[in-house]
Length: 443
Image 1 (cartoon, helix red, strand yellow):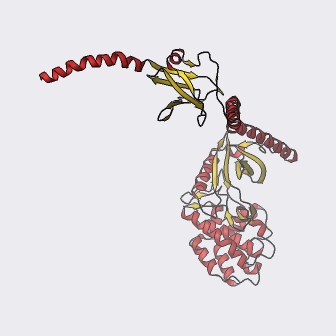
Image 2 (image 1 turned 180 degrees about the vertical axis):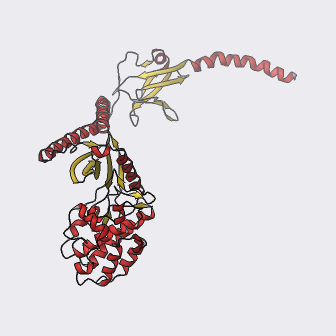
Image 3 (image 1 turned 45 degrees about the vertical axis):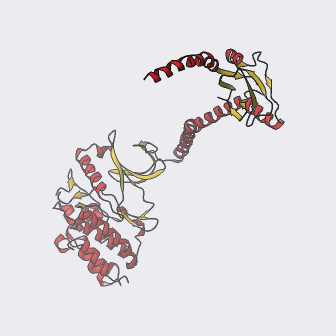
């Protein structure tokens, strides 16, 4: 213990002397110094016996000096220091925070290419900044302003086309060129007693828009029936049934938006003398598939006719217009005392107001088959709706084999069974009809 105390007593004065002499000298020269050079903003290296020590703290030539030497030797340069050395009074430099104190730049000899490159870099700073601002402005324009300009140009072009289209239309239909839920009605595809079907466009998509006439839309029972049509169409997803895209009520205007089928109706396939049986079978098998699917969903079409069967440009048949469709458990088939449907294709039970099932569609599609094969309806020459209704109820149709001599007997048996007055005498369902059609020779 005494030895330890003796050592501490001896070391105390020595430590005090060190702090008094070395410590203050070591800490005397500290601070940031900005070196002024020509060219400006050079990097600074401290020259030591063992080599160079890089001092540069940032790109503006400001370095932090911390040394116990009153004078240091430095070299300047950019990527590499030049051999020229310069003495720096550290005490004076740290007090003034600049070297040289008179602010006269220290000349640094550089190769012409190096000097040119760095002078351009320094002097082009603002130009580069302006370039960056320009690029930012261009990017802002591309992201925000250019789409707006494109939209304005598109709107102007759209308005021009609408004006041209309006000038070519001779129809005074007030709905033409109007908007129905964003769909522009650009043409009329067809019209009936209760609705008109328009060609519509929205965001480049072409559709068919069925618009119910306002006098029909004002009837509450009709509105309920339209609601059922929307429900029915929405649930029938089949490749041979037209797809429903949208429906609604716009200020009392009932509408139904469907896919637009590029093609023509089966009506255009009907011609005098009838079609070849093979062609009829090719057309009707997909239709019977679609109808069987609808029946499996509990839906009766009730308005089957060639006009409601479309053929796409590729020849694919599409069943459409379920405006009179009903669930098979509904019995009411009239509205305000009026028979619903097209008289030439009505089943007797539709006319008499009896209970309906899927076999009423069988009767109607049987007339379509008859017409395709014979080129005429089962009651030729009769056009008055009342007379047609009487014929459906009480008179047998002209036998198919009389209307189309030479047709294989199996065709006549198939079609005439579908046209029986009593539903119980017809095929039990559409699948049975399809099976019978499939089994007939295509000759």
